[in-house]
Image (cartoon, rainbow, N blue to C red):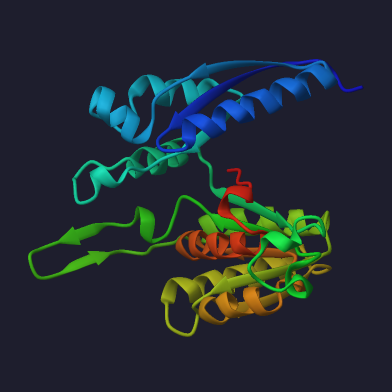
Length: 265
């Protein structure tokens, strides 16, 4: 049996279904603690729309400080349609806490067991046995770039540094070493300069540090199609922030529902 420990967990129920799912998750963790002799101490804090309603900020200072000091953070959901079009949005709290905690990689695993294959809208022979892991870069790209807006135009700047790409790339290759030894890096290198930097950096890290891992590159638009046509071909998928956001939601349908797709940062 592993060493007994006490873990301090900050719970951010957030909005919508968030309070319901975090309560269920706490019950699961408590059961795990009982089995393995660990203790989980939970404290709740506000984030997102719930925090805006109570404090005017999507990420109050006490929430930020508690998250940084905790062993782990359990997040429910963030977002509320009533804030659409308003200058302060619930999602700003989520983006800020990711940045401040240095959570540069979002992991979304998908395993489709034979017992659950019928829940997918796709044919059983396509989804049964799917076992893949998405590594989404989480603190760079267009979500964190400079934004402009006038009455007649708008822009969102997508930027990446070599260091940002390197650290998530290494994490993905290390995960592949423990799995089936294959990484598919997804970009839009035929059009975007950030994607060309992404592809060059991933290729270099592969050659210098992980030559035993199989690496392939894919364009994001064709990848969206292949994930529906032949999802069993993939092991670890590595991609940037916005592409990873979209593709990981797409693959949730392979297992039947986005509510069945875990996520950790």
